[in-house]
Length: 185
Image 1 (tube, rainbow, N blue to C red):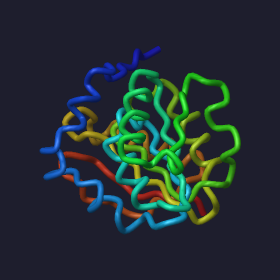
Image 2 (cartoon, helix red, strand yellow; image 1 turned 90 degrees about the horizontal axis):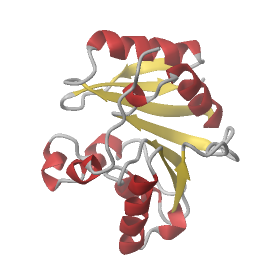
Image 3 (tube, one colour; image 1 turned 120 degrees about the horizontal axis):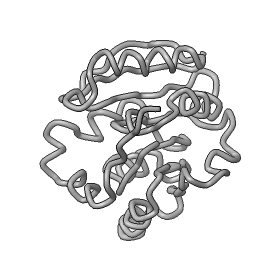
Image 4 (tube, one colour; image 1 turned 180 degrees about the vertical axis):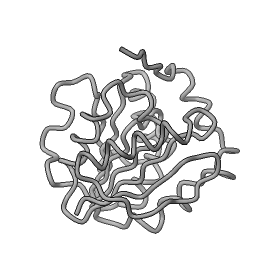
């Protein structure tokens, strides 16, 4: 079985650098998909590079469910959430918990799966779980780092998503990334 590398928790600090916004601006990437009141998932949220901007976009009546496998990432994210005054619209979920997806079936409007699927040992299960959370007609933005994940590997992941019911909606242009928008029909 292939061993999957998980980004160390301390790398989360590097993912937060302001310079990153020049190539991967959360508002530009997500602004056309998110609006107040939506329920969304940031799967692989780390310390919240996308999570906090997402929370601001869906606030005041929406919710961002932030999933990560590392509790240290989630702890730092919670500190950032509190500092931003967004506790009412952010919920943290540890993927190691057997109940991480509980209560979300057919309840989610949007999923962000950004630079994390390649770290998941069972992508088939991941796409099945994410598909189950989405409402019919909801979308998932799936992106992987082009320098770390080959086009072939990305296409294999997209094929797994399709095997689990997702439909391709089209490629998305994000610097240094392979990215696609997918729909739950």
